[in-house]
Length: 263
Image 1 (cartoon, rainbow, N blue to C red):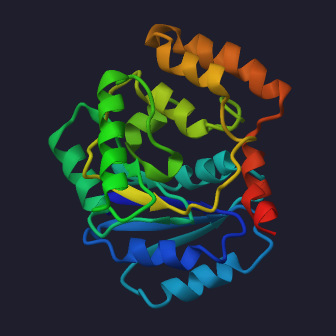
Image 2: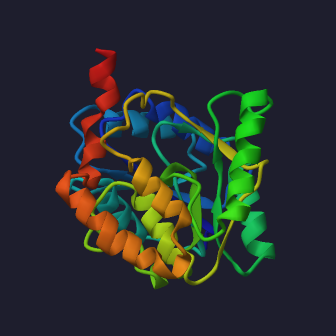
């Protein structure tokens, strides 16, 4: 049995998939199954993914389709096929360094209390001063606010059993944006998350306009300073009502706002 499953949901990502797949296929740690979930793409994403992966016959690949729109639905479909002890979620427009998976595996194998390993997101070479500063800032925040999420869904890995124990990816539990933070909130009820200033990935900078898919200053402030025992209230009462009011559902991510702005 493989040790890892990597879930890659995608929707119309033909421009970015090849680069992401190349970085995954170049991992030093090869004990994984790559699970691609096509979330009703209308471009050539699936064909391009298969063409790219044809050059890596040693990589174990599963191709799935999920017609219900929304990343949460795609991840839920992917998680159902997972039979490995560990699972990673990645995004189609993100670069992962060759030791990314090895680092996560080493943490999980040696620290049984850790249920999630999270990476820092950087937007310049790792050796660059800005990247170093950002990674150390995320590490500091993760220590001060240890019962919060400091990584997006492109940078999260989990113990599969722990993730399933808290409900996994479920559209009925949380159909809104920031589902990566909500999932980690549930996960922190059963264990710890791990951050390191040396563990990183590099998402695309294309997302210039995130106004529809993030919380406002008040919501972010309350997220940071609400005690953990009140975090259920924060997500499922306070934030749920506000996201419902402005229709901030997970399908907002499918609009590719950045492409409209670039045009």
